[in-house]
Length: 294
Image (cartoon, rainbow, N blue to C red):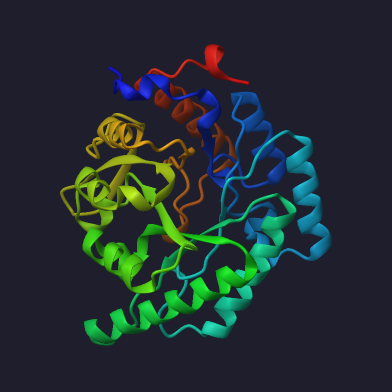
């Protein structure tokens, strides 16, 4: 079953998060090339290092190898504001990570950086909100200086709690350098419906992560192949396409690798799951590789 509007999605608009396919860059490039994907979203490479952690020479080498492989990098996923931080984390340190990430991304011809909006540290809700929004305003000003756009993912942090908080963040920060990365499956962990969330934030969505799953009886999220979960994935895609979204759809299976839970999986399991995920998504959405892959 297809979504209707999704029938027009070109295979060339599919990409994926590299370390969901393999831990090392060489294998990430190989698997994406094998699948015929034209984009590679970078989070970590060899040794589980984010791009901002690489010495300049290594960052340049990552860029060279990726470009030679013919892959576009639409987004670099930074740890700014994510599960490894709180609103008490040094903001100066976060700004340094943002700047280093921007410089590494520039080598790849990329100017979009994934961020989140800081988990709480136990302080009262109103104080968490105020500090999170203060930080996002500072980060947005820095993004303006660096010439990059921050894509806030509906994940860890104050604004990741739901659509209301997300819209409040966007309106209060009020910067064209702050947009959204919509993950179809993250609502499973935060207790909201993906379609209802998306309906509220459509005008700001600039990038999409594809994830599916369901909530187990114990309340934990369990991730599945596309179409086998409860997130109404095809409805999300239909909404996006009908609204006019023409950006990337990025695979994030979370079948064998879940960074924030410390789940890594062995390389063979990662690669096999990633290949299966790409096949399942194209079948679900009726995307024809032969007709659309460039």
